Length: 94
Image 1 (cartoon, one colour):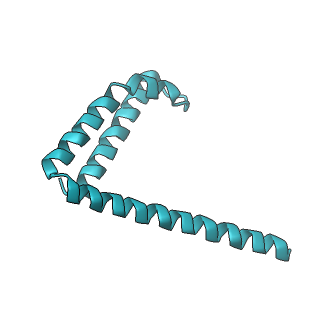
Image 2 (tube, rainbow, N blue to C red):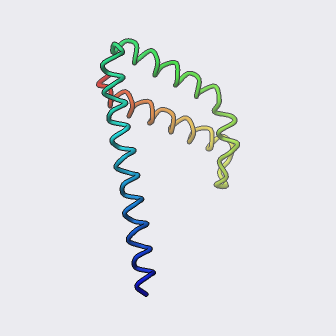
């Protein structure tokens, strides 16, 4: 029983450290980007990313296996791309 508790505690600690490290790296990356790129460059890069992702809607929709029709899966993928674009633009203050 003690070894099980130790394992759970160690696993939880390691996972929480990984989440913190990822969050710190993300924050650092955002700051670096904001210092090295103009808002117009960031926006252009995001627009290019979104455009590229939109060209792959069909392939991504094919990978979704939740029983929805292909049209619904396409719409779901499109909404995910739009949401990610909006959240990233918001992060950069655009």
